Length: 234
Image (cartoon, rainbow, N blue to C red; front, side, top):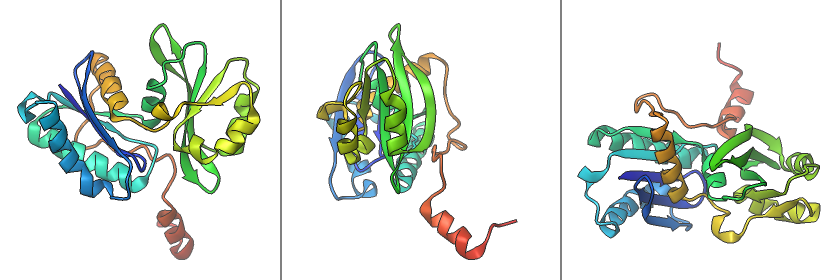
């Protein structure tokens, strides 16, 4: 049984899954911080799924890109539990997990997350023979540039994620071949992190609980401001 944690955005999610079945999932989007609700949700999830802590054999965690604070909270929790329970931890790309929830063959799947100042974290994926394949790796790009780039694609393009919600007017205005994903899959889900985590486990992928780090892609605004005021460290 695998426990999954998703805290890369305002939505907080936890899930339990076997290799072929989603057992239980909790996803909430409220004003409470992840630090307030994550551990209570994990305890509630284990109770709902009738799963003991001893039954957990691995932990998958969404490692970004996304909210710097949310990623740190989710990863710190996952690493602490993996260490205490003595189980492997698997870091899962937030963008890949978003795309994994959208099984649309013969389409390009483009998850977008807010990177501030009109920019988005973006990657592009495609399903091939039942496997999710990366077409464009995670990057930071201006939202309009991302839309314009995909507007010339011959395949349908499905955009999802909080960045798609934030810039949905521009996406709708682009028309074919770009469309917005339906609401039930537009936000990250811990269930997708869980199932993708199982897939990575089958491929032999496990991460070091001591060295696994979030996939930030860019520096935080606080780091940039500090450098502007104090100069680069030698």
